[in-house]
Structure formats: C-alpha cells, structure tokens
Amino acid sequence: MRRIGFILFTVAVMLTLVKLGLWQLTRAQEKEALNHALKHRSEQMYYSLASLPSDPRWYGLTLHGTFEHRYAVLLDNQIYRGQVGYHLLYPLKVNRDWVLVNLGWIAAPTYREQLPVLPEHHGELRVEGIIAPPSQMPTLAAPSETLVWPQRVQVVDLELLSQQMDLPLKPWVLQIDPDNALALQQTWTPVVMGPHKHYAYAVQWFLMAVAISGLAFWWLKRTRA
Image (cartoon, rainbow, N blue to C red):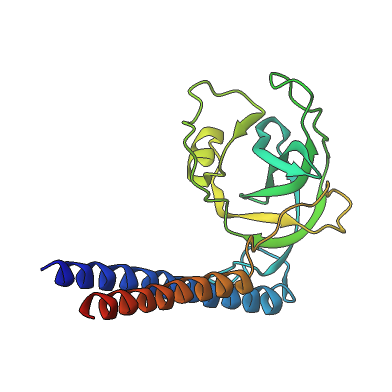
C-alpha cells in the first residue's frame, strides 16, 4: 500500500511539472508571435483612426490633435535607472475622437505627497507612436474614491478612466515614438520577458520531472531489493 501511494504521488508530481513545462512552451510561442507582430505591424503606419484595421494593436499611427491637460494620468511605480517615477498620459482629441497617449517617464519628487511638474503642449500637435493594449498588471490597491487630477493610478483601466473623464477613449493606448518632439524618457517595452527565458524555464521543469522520476525508480528498486 505504501508503494502504491508513493507511485501515485510521484506520478502526480511529474504530471504537474510536465504541465508547467508545457505552459512555459506555450508562453514562449505567444511571445514569439508577439515579437513577429511587433516587427511587421510596427513598420506599417496609419494616418487616421478611420483607416485602422479591426485589430489595431502594434501598428504605427500618426495623428494630429490637441491634448486635454486637465485630465493628466500618472501611471505609478515606474522605475528608471533606480529612480522612482511615473508614466505620463494625456487624452488627445482627434476631431471627435479621444486617444490616451503615453508620453513616457517622468521622475517623481522626493516626497510622496508631491506631484511632478507636468509638461504641457498646446495647440494642434503631431503625435506618432505604436498602438498598444493598456497595462493589465494585477494590483491589490483599490481605486481612489477621491477623484483628483492629475490622477495617480496603479493600472491603466481605460473603461474607468473614460467614465471619470467623461470622454469616449479608444480601448488602447498610443505609445509615443521616442523620436517625437513631445516624448519624455522612454522606458516602455511591449515584451517584459523574451521567449528564450520561457524556454529556459520549460527546460528546468522538464529536468525536474526527469530527476524525480529517476529518484522514484531508484527508491522503488531499492525497496524491492
């Protein structure tokens, strides 16, 4: 009975490790597909919102519009060279449409209760960049009940921001081109972890499964002897 229980436990652990390895392989393939889309789509530039395809992610986009500075959004906890800061986002009015634009990183003041001095750009402006989905990293912090602008946020929730601003924001963010005259320090990256790391993690899980199977075989052979 003891041997049967040990065998069942070993099989369960091995299946779990193999499943984790396969999941890492799937993630690696997803990252490779993302890199492929980034490489090919970002080279294609659109010049109006009406001309965008149904899935506009990762395409280049050039717009002319005006910023609404009173609705500044500061994406919190952005680190650059060991310094804490924010990503500054402004809604851009393009005819009757609104697009949230990420201008880049700005340093945070020494004290938490202070906010950085935000740059403002008036008049009609040319803004080009890459269309990206908003940040969807999980957070334990609840949204602030007191709505104060500029607003510090832990995650870019476009539906919530659209309600708070009372503006029909597009369901994506325009990440400004680093060469644009309006761009701040650029720290945004579309792929946090490359596919090679996922492949390395997959190999680790598979090696652990092999090691456990080897140890289990050795123990069973030893107890039988």
